[in-house]
Length: 288
Image (tube, rainbow, N blue to C red; front, side):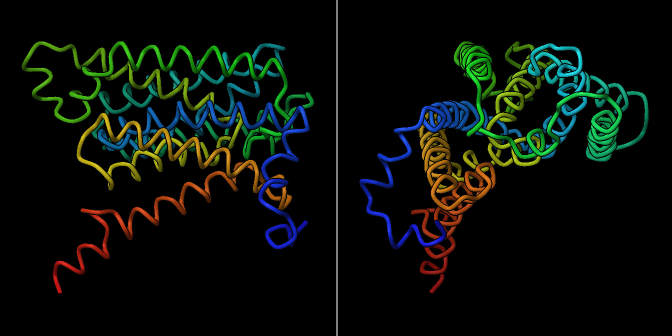
């Protein structure tokens, strides 16, 4: 298997995995999650919320454990704890002199540690590696249904409030001056972030979901100055990364979540080097 790049022909590389039901399901879910994460990542990049994305993705862990222990869909517990972590961050920030980045670090590490303790104490069949690193190849039909429902909700919210959210992320002062309720948009975006983090858990897990929420938007940001084109490029790069990552993980027998994120990182490096206006090689040629 380790020599598949040499021994396998392109047609077999693409067609053979599709003969398996679990691979077809994994590819569909990964592509859908990639599209949703890619869309939201544009707003995250404009807002500069990389650390907030990291906080929410880690904070949902105790919710996943509690939901599994109670026999509830993991998405419910994850969403509750994700939103709860955001509310706690806002409360501590308002009631103390501690800066926001410090509060975020305190909250997400505390919630993550709580999740680890709960895994060790609650008797269940929870697989810690599944939570941390995802398992799209083991996706069940119920997981697919949850992913479809949550993805639909996230996309609808971003479509309905997309323009206001874009202005809020780009220039909140101007958005406030023209009468937009930026407080509502702030918590709406955080709620969407929590939902998207829940969606990403199935594919890449808690550890790597932040990469899916940041890397596609960062890649597209290097390639264009227009937000509409940025969203298209981010979604395309994320979907391609997800599909190619699943294929590579199947043929090379490596961790699927890590494979997806590595492909995303590789695409970002290409943009970083060769982007028409903002690539470092292009800038160096201008200087010389």
